[in-house]
Image (cartoon, rainbow, N blue to C red):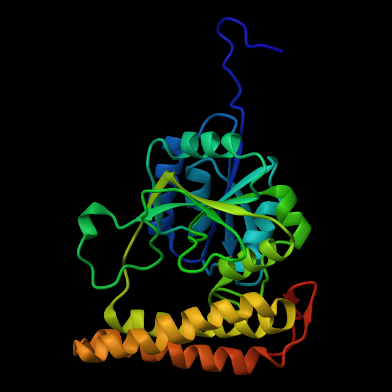
Length: 311
């Protein structure tokens, strides 16, 4: 059926946009305002409240006409899984609450999804907001100008769940995010990289696309960044502990990248330059990787997911 005169044309790829959040109403408000300016009439906006301690998050979601879903236990993996399982559309896009998207963001995702029907997931471009240029070490940034294919041989930065599109059928095939991974979970980081590992293991491929552009707020202090690096390491160690049981070849790639290239080699360069923050952050990440691996290697894995148990 074609659209008649005066009838709005339905977008080829309507989006279900999932925003997990916990007790950050000011950041959420700015995120939803930018999303609403970019989204079309047929797009769906879902806010998943990750067990916030006040009702303000729901008020913010209502203000922006978003569907509100409440998670009774915290965890970004729990929230994202609730979000995609509530989605009406087959193309799901995840956005973090400290991210702002540009005005063409939704249209860029539609164009990307339509152009690559055989691709299961896409990471989008994430930069530092212009007013925050020059921050000491930006977090969760992927600002490359050229697209790239992502497969099980890919290393380096694949992108981030702060601006991530995944086909619903691919999420269903691997049962979504491992709820033990990421903020609020048993292992506090790497939920998207664990997701990518399992998508690759299931035979899917992805792409990085610079068209759907967003900016990630850089709000952490130097001390908070060091703690974050330890958490990043914990997630990497848990990811490695899972991979040695599920995909030995990729485990070797990830170990070389994070322990040698981003660990020993980076530590030596930071030391040679007497860059104290670089030394501290690299040591924190290496220490976290060892701790995360030791904790995770004894946790059973079933169907690619850690089996929940006492922490």
